[in-house]
Image 1 (spheres, rainbow, N blue to C red):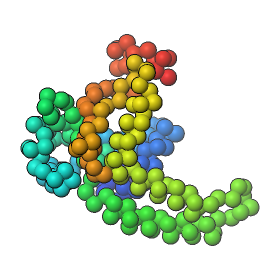
Image 2 (tube, one colour):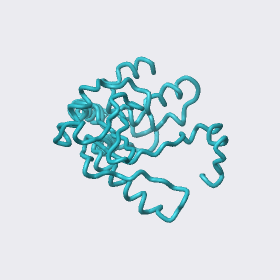
Image 3 (cartoon, rainbow, N blue to C red):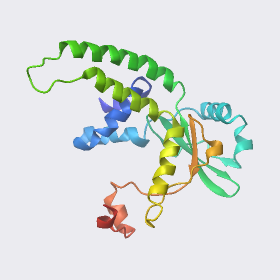
Length: 211
């Protein structure tokens, strides 16, 4: 199932963030397949990337950045990330997949119908009453926030401010001048995924402290 889902990711956008969130409760091949949705989804063409950036930022890519790598370093269910340089600063530019909101509008409308059906059919004698429509509304609200990169940028700034006194926290600086709902530009900060235990150990990371 997972290889098919990854290959046809364009048809499953509304489900991808939710599927990723539950990967920790699974094991084996299913868990590994789901985790590929985080950064190993097939990327979209560089021509599309350029078109989105230029439309969002209002200028040609080579005028906005001193250097822009058209090969993404990662691609996920909602967007992909490219390295760039500006005035000597190493950056990453996250670009949203094209037509994402239109797909959300269509698929979430269909899911709303399903939620309403479940609300009517769900037996009330098997336990706590479930409000399927309320669950849908909350999920839909979160998903729409996921595709507004200005909210992600604002949360990054808030997170950085909240933990500014902790020297072992590093939050990338947001470049607001080059950030829109579909393009997020931030400082490039290389790192290692927290689940790569061996690699973290080789770097001497204090895992108990990191917890």
